[in-house]
Amino acid sequence: LMHEEFARAHRRLKHVRNVIAVGKLSGAVGTNAHLSPEVEAYVCGKLGLEPASIATQVVQRDIHAEFMNCLALVAASFEHWAVEFRHLQRTEVLEAEEPFTKGQKGSSAMPHKRNPITWERLTGLARVIRGNAVAGLENVALWHERDISHSSVERIIFPDSCTLLDYMFGLVVRLMDGLNVYPENMKKNLGLSLGMWNSQTVLLALIRKGLTREEAYDLVQRNAMKTWEVKHAGRDNADFLEVLKSDPDVAKHFMQGELEKLCSLDFHLKEVRNRFKTLGL
Image (cartoon, rainbow, N blue to C red):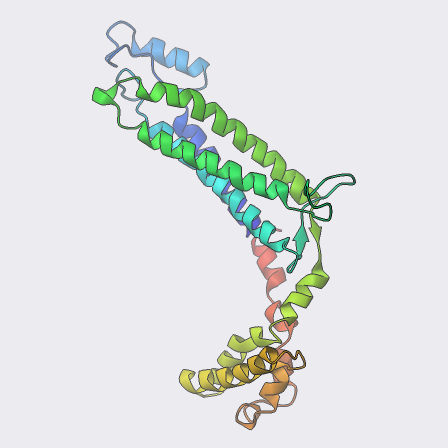
């Protein structure tokens, strides 16, 4: 998911680079009265720009607003994963953790803490770039196609957003290069639901056996509720698979060992390699 989202971000940046690469030297009102279109095209070409097909005193600002919104969308993708990894670093989850170097302080008041401070920084910076994108949208409506209300704004939002996004790129690369991953905690957290994550698999299997969806749903839900009751009683000795097997209304539809295969991680992960191949990974 992260790979695909960042691939889309890369495509957006390449596209918007071409969108915003326009310039004008067509005069105060865009009529080329004092400078020929040939000169305009020559100068723009030297700068790596396309001459605007038509302009007033300025290049129309919807172009720049698109650029700013693209930066905000890329920053939002960084924020998306920053929030995800912040949640994964919570003490009660701890499936992944940002790099923590020797001597680093997680909290000035509580020496034991290992806070996801860099992911938090990314979350905050995304808000700044998103706010700048709003300012870019407000620059689109200029009085009679030209006032200077946009100028003071753009002197801040363009360099700030570009610099911040570049900085965010560097942070994400560093974080992912040093990310600590704890598969044993993933397995432990998966076990907290006592195997009930297999409920849809069993539901669909019962439907394939000939039950209506309503009948299958009722059977699976009934056994899931039994499993929940044991968990809510403070006992973790319940197992959804065993509860299903002990219900004759369920067990009669399956051959020996069939439920075990359905309720295994291997069943759920059987297409993972093919999915990675599809992504070119």
